[in-house]
Image (cartoon, rainbow, N blue to C red; front, side, top):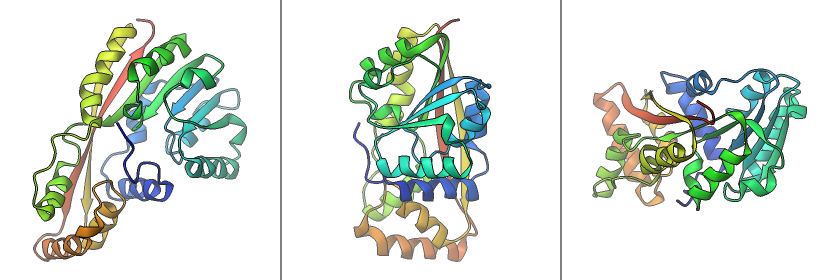
Length: 258
């Protein structure tokens, strides 16, 4: 699956994260860490770290004796991670690597205790090979946790968008199919124990401007529909106080040992 226009854009990513925090009802990190079993002294490989939404909290949780290798394809995003780490005095706990997901085994020299991939593993061009690499890189008691959008993620916003485009929403972008199908299958082929979890985060927008700002930082964004979107959002809020779309997430926890 190819990256969308905003998937490697650090500014757009920060905008979406801020939107989730401001308008969302639930916290993604709390849900992830509930299933990831972090503790002091662990080594972590993070694939697709983005601007550090999980990286920085993890660096606090693993303490001064732990370490994170944070991987992302965007140099801009990694620079943001490192600046934030320096501000928090956590830079000694984090190493950044500007690479894609494929071939991960070639540039991570040491085994790790945990692998986290939030909204990124489905971009692998050769997922079978990536899963084999991750299984090999994990220590015997290691855990892989990956999460991403369900097939019906943001259905409400998609319907709003495609009503302007005059077309029906596509069945799936590929990410949902990976999270509900391919990713789970590959995990079960290699790992001793695999558990699947779900997470819903309703985003409740209270103005046309807020809804537009989210859409404009999302892969649905189409400059040709900008004026129509603004007008339709304004019209919607003339009769409604809130627009709700639900971030629907699938999480997979795979343990190397039962």
